[in-house]
Image 1 (spheres, helix red, strand yellow):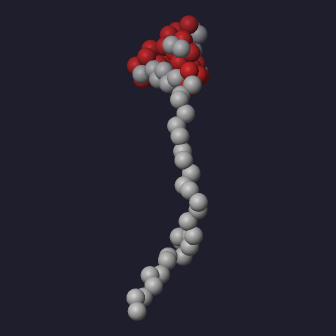
Image 2: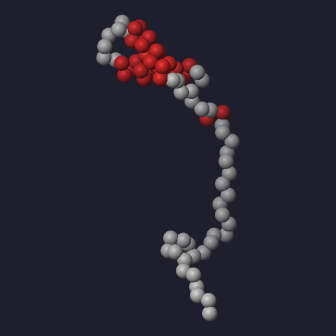
Length: 76
């Protein structure tokens, strides 16, 4: 008499009626890839912001973030 194979506890003992069919949706035009400026582009734009501010210290992070944002939105 053949022996029964044991089913691991992590697997369900019954199979559902049919597997779920997953389809890919076409990307919407709004989902276009976001332009990623290079390090050099951001650095140059941040430096120009620094010069426009009069070369004062203390806002380098803000210059960088605003330059990056400006470059991203200008390329859309």
